[in-house]
Length: 163
Image 1 (cartoon, rainbow, N blue to C red):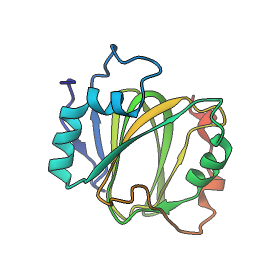
Image 2 (image 1 turned 90 degrees about the horizontal axis):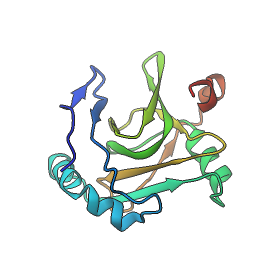
Image 3 (image 1 turned 135 degrees about the horizontal axis):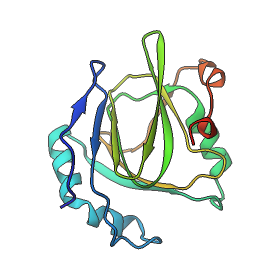
Image 4 (image 1 turned 120 degrees about the horizontal axis):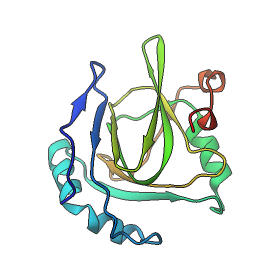
């Protein structure tokens, strides 16, 4: 089982953990292999948070939908349930709009972030994405966003400002 740091939560309920990534994971491991490698931690979180499904999003610079997906994730949105992401490899930035402040969090391999339900946020993987993340959902449909329509994301530095 991967070693992990104790969960930490901010006053706003954002959850942070660090897990030990698995060096034995092949660079081209598919979703089933990644989920199997982290199954004990995934099962713990699913039981703890009532999540019903897990998947893996894996992006690379040659991904055919990288532009479309980046644009979708760059728009501020919320989810009706908590959003849990564990970064197996690579990195990306989560932007959390909490009250009158925005916090940018660079997530790298080994980082787990939990964004509470109804928290406005957006996500930037850069124009040459390179990451894999396990996603947990309470909704059997998976990733369902409710876009706020706010242009706020356009006023903040993008991914490349942080790397």
